Length: 319
Image 1 (cartoon, rainbow, N blue to C red):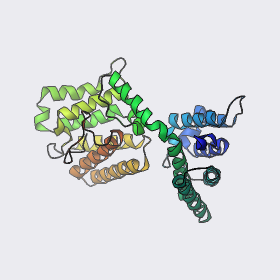
Image 2 (image 1 turned 30 degrees about the vertical axis):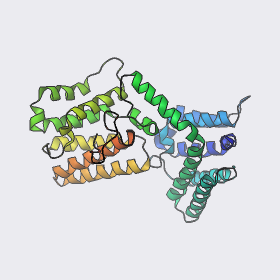
Image 3 (image 1 turned 180 degrees about the vertical axis):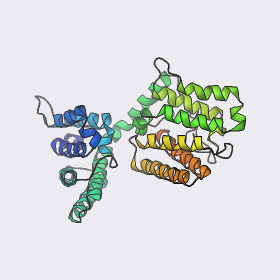
Image 4 (image 1 turned 60 degrees about the horizontal axis):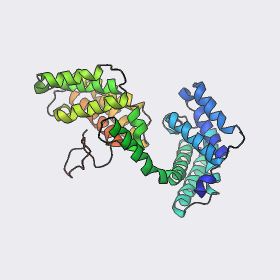
């Protein structure tokens, strides 16, 4: 709690605003720019904790602010990041967090001297994450509990991870539905199964009150009931599932994701595009299946299958 009370609001606000300015889409979004500038506005009774939650709301609403892929490294966000690391370094923190922030500060300073702006601002993002992980950790279990309760109230199994709920809320339902339908069409047994075909086509049906999360669970149910949809051995590689897979990788690439997952999806996209150019349809759609699995592994709770049960060690990770 003491670390949260010492939150360097204005310094972090300065860093976040340089990230907004360095992001073409965000800098053109008047609401995002206004919300960023509002971090500097003094209001009666507003303290560091109030500012901390305003900052958290800002980065939750526009997660691309903290996405190192979306923003262009500049001298401004590099310098602002170093200033933030210095300010966080002055806060009384547990040794592990303090060491992580010192390391991020030193790495950013060295990168700045070497003219490596990308490493500079990535190091600052890493140090900032160490601080927020520390102060938000006490609320992590509560956040997962509230998500579980929300899912149960909607009639769904509590299988989503609260750590990646933003990525789940940005699920590209229609694009994934298009990919899965090409897989059904390319599978002789499934394409002859009227129920499987109907369930696949139903992913495109708009219904009142149906959101991305509802579609996500419908998709999950589809692939759990007919797991052969995601079996690369059962489906024939075609130009359709190759193109649909590339479209899905592009859509997932537009979702704000942790760097490891984002990198896995970018790699799958590039591999699929190259394979398509070379006429290698099998590699193309296998690459897309791999990228899709990276996304689903992120949004699902660890060691859970589609029914909320603990996975067996040998169980497939494909959703």
